[in-house]
Length: 217
Image 1 (spheres, rainbow, N blue to C red):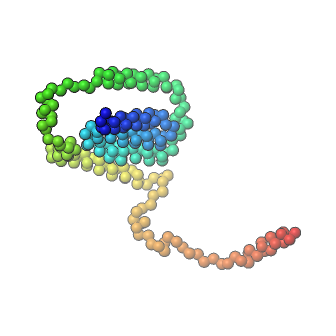
Image 2 (cartoon, rainbow, N blue to C red):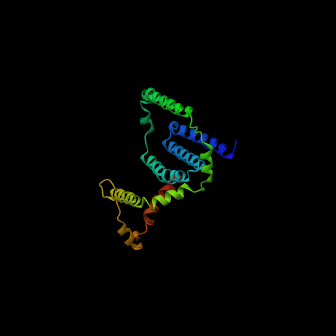
Image 3 (cartoon, helix red, strand yellow):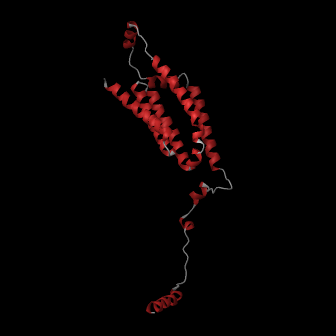
């Protein structure tokens, strides 16, 4: 068994365990972290299959952005786990049937196999092709042939980001907003006020005398 095959089995085993823990973890934060681990293992498998672009995209987009957002949302919402578990066993039979059907469909596909009989001519032609990076070739296509669709998608995402920020910063009755301009123009003397107060030693003495009298008694 080669090193690549051994790494494939290791990554696949960890992926299956992490995916199983995603649906069995009681804490939603732990489930999100296991999902991040699942994406990492899938990225490693794609790297073994020489799909560098898909591997890097999975790490940068899903793990670096989407899953971090999910993690912060889950931590901020403080989801009530007990309320979500109500009625779990009532829906379990239907969920089990759907899971079994999906497992059988996947088994039917995998049992058929993906064996492709290659002719010697095709193998020789593939070996004669130069070794190029698919990420490099996709980059060339994106920034040459598909440059305008890429710019349109980037503009749409930029507008969506501005809209999300504007919705967050709008003034509402139940939130306390602070203007950034006021924070920049603030001075040190406006942040703290020193008050001069008269000494209260005379007011403290009777209390001390009373305490001493009670101690002697």
